[in-house]
Structure formats: C-alpha cells, structure tokens
Image 1 (cartoon, helix red, strand yellow):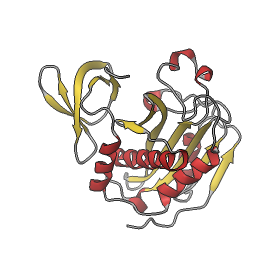
Image 2 (tube, one colour):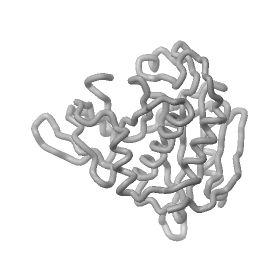
Image 3 (cartoon, helix red, strand yellow):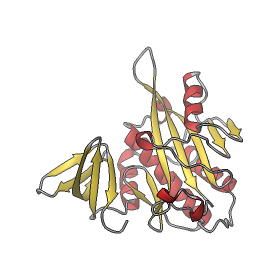
Length: 252
C-alpha cells in the first residue's frame, strides 16, 4: 500500500517548550497531515508517564509529526507507536550503519542504553468523539555525550554517538525518518507487528512490570497480533499487558 501524499510543511524552532504540545495545538486547529515540528532545543520535552525528556541544544532530534488517522487508519496508538519505532530504527540503520533494537513499547535501544523514545498522543474530534489524528513525538539522542546527561540518567541513557562526534548530520537522520514515515510502502498491521517483534530485544528475559502503584516481576514471553506484551508472572499465571512500563532485570 503506497503512502498518501503528506504535507511538506516543516516548522523549525530554535527553542520551544515541547514539539508535541505545539503539534497538538496545530492539529486541533486543522494543520495538515504530515506536518513536522522540529526544535534545536526543548525546555520541557515530554516523555511517557509525565516524565521529561532531556533535550540539550544541537545534540538530539526533537520532533513531532501530525498523522491524520483517516489517512493511515491505524487500529490503536500501540500500532502507531510500533510503526514509528520501526521507521526510526530503520532510519538509524540506514543512515548510521548501526542496528538499534526496541524495548516494549516505545524505547529505542543501542548498546544496552536508551537512545530515544516515541510518545504517541491521540487528538479526538469534538463532534464525533473519535480519534481524528495522532501526534507522534520522537526524541533521539544523536551526539549527546554521556557526561552531559544528568547523573541520574547516565547509567541507562545513551546516544547514537556518545563521544559527541557524529559523522552524519541530524538533518540527514530527520530526512530519512520523514521519508520512512510518509513515503514508500505502509505494511498491514499483521506484518507491522511481525517486524516490530523482530526488533524487540527483551523477549525471554525477566522484567519488572510497573503499572501505576503496582510493581511485580515477570518474564516477557511474546507479543500478540495487536502488539500487546504477553508475560508470565512468578506464580505461573500468563497475562496480557496492554499498557504500563517495564524494566529489564537481566542485562540492563
């Protein structure tokens, strides 16, 4: 299936609080499908579960895109996140000649450290109460030095080029991500989740599941055809994880 034509509207900020906040405002006002918002720095970058995303100047990609749900017709935010994560991984592999992996559901991993993440937010039409668009926030640490991260993040956060010397430009990587998001062939969701599963590195490992105030240990077994994580609790019960956060107990 070929991609529908996307807007060529790219909006660049030197500094902004959050590209996702700006994208959401633009989507509500009717901004075109495929609009891209980029910033050289974010003062209040958004991560999952209300966390901030560390966004120092000129060393990362901080971007959000508007995706019209009537155009792509994804079945769920999980599918949007999986699709975007695959596009980002494929772009890094193509431009940087490195092979990142994914930690369910939205973290981009390279050399055992998180180098980026995807934040998917839905925009609901007031009249129909249906999802009219998705805002896809993409944050990637390209050349942020390990020593530049806050101490609390240094153990788990990384960059594509952690020494600060990037042989490719951020623009090259941004262009490749946009090309893969909006120009080419869009897989059906069955194939999408097969490809997503191939990028997951934590299947078969012990994990800590965090859901609101509830935490428990389990083993990550598989994903189903909707991208939900199948886990086995320590008591032997097999359950389906639709949302939440996981940490790897071995190898992280």
